[in-house]
Length: 373
Image 1 (tube, one colour):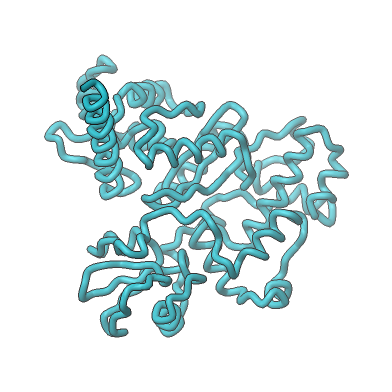
Image 2 (spheres, helix red, strand yellow):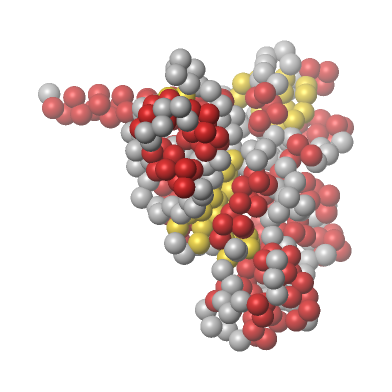
């Protein structure tokens, strides 16, 4: 199984969409099995939808197709209030349920295209779905699951022979090859390999990818961020670890806290974070954690707080290199003029995050005032 590096973690923008006729048919039928594979923009209304949207269907000539929410939003479309394409949908579509169950119960099994056909699944559709939801090819996802199982078994005391074959590797050489791609080393060069567990979290602002080790969360980014591959490389370098899809207690905690955050009921994250960087970056990130929920600071404010008011640009660079979005709240840093400035996840997300926090704080204050009366 390979890590999620730049060669096997293509963003959706680089992948071809299904043929237009296929997308038109799916949209006109309201086919939910295509949700997450593409989005539909209606030129006459300026609204974009999921394929399954139950709204009245427009004429074919008034329809545009996009591979991501980001593409639709940056093309000037706003989200449909009926199908709500920006909101989270954790469940896989029904047509994929049997395959996902098989992957979880038998992660060591090698599933080939012929196996997908026997399950009455179109291999091309499966590939598009995994690329859209996870940014991984289907085969890369399966390899990552196998390596995660083997590494977890070794970490908890299993014999290497048992772990290798129980995880579905046909030989030690196959395991060593996968290990080398993930860690840049051989299994014998380290007594107990570290590993960064990766998970995908759906949010109202689009899917995010999170990484955690036993010490805490090390990564949280929107999956369409351009710098995602750079952040993966930084995590691998800083922790000398591979990146593999696997469950972890800190990922479960993070998912629950993010859900509460987007509901407006959580103002401070409790999940531990680990963010090694340069000494200056670490000072900037520590200062970000001091910015209260629902408030903002300028880049100059942060520089002054660090005792170096001339370091505004350096603060901006460090802010942009933050690997743990939302939890380490780089979105709360704005220009001195009050304008939003930059944000790796897109200014539209920064605007919505700040609006969410300000609105939640106002509701909380109103509720407190009402109670006091």
